[in-house]
Length: 292
Image (cartoon, rainbow, N blue to C red):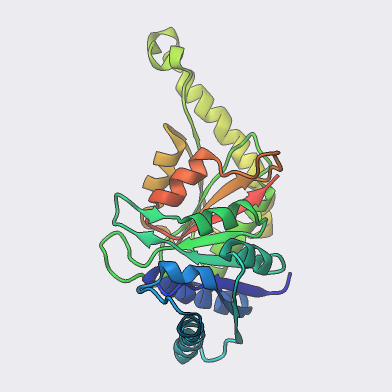
């Protein structure tokens, strides 16, 4: 790892919020910060820049002004800038993320219900990098400017007990540790249709399953709690649709952490349905962590 946070800029409020969040994260990690702009992001900016020279100047100004603004509040940060021309933004960001600790992207919010718009660039980048990616929106659920330094809320982690969760647990524990905030670990499940529609078959089946899953989750967390003894960990086994449960639990979170299985299918990588739903509807910053 390079101890570097990379953030993509596109000239929108979302990109600005992502830069603020990334600067705060770089301070927490004692890492350097790299601001990246790829030329084809200009089409998502606040205005059209049709000519090559004005577009190039606009991009240079975006990088330099953002760097100056961040240094006014994070004066000790080591901040570098990089602009590219003629290369797809997703390729630029994926390449930049290869040796970075974290990649941060902005997502345009449409309010508490609509949540994120994760554009084609962001979605493609997430699918093609194994580096953790954080999505940041410019406004909170009350349409107030996001305050990236507000770590009062917990870090919320959604886990699948049938998958290898080590990389997600390491990331979430370290993020909660840095912020000195609680970690809430959730596993969500649903009863089989036959039992959910005929509870009389076994009234205690839901509680029995919940108890078993709770035991499994506590066993999974045990080594991480020993590694982070000062961390307050809250475990929750919830019945219901995972995406809905995660969105509800993370409404006041400092960060929501979800996973993406690393797959190399012939038709290209994909994002699972739960992570996809969370990315588009969460009101807190969302970290997507690739795992086996």
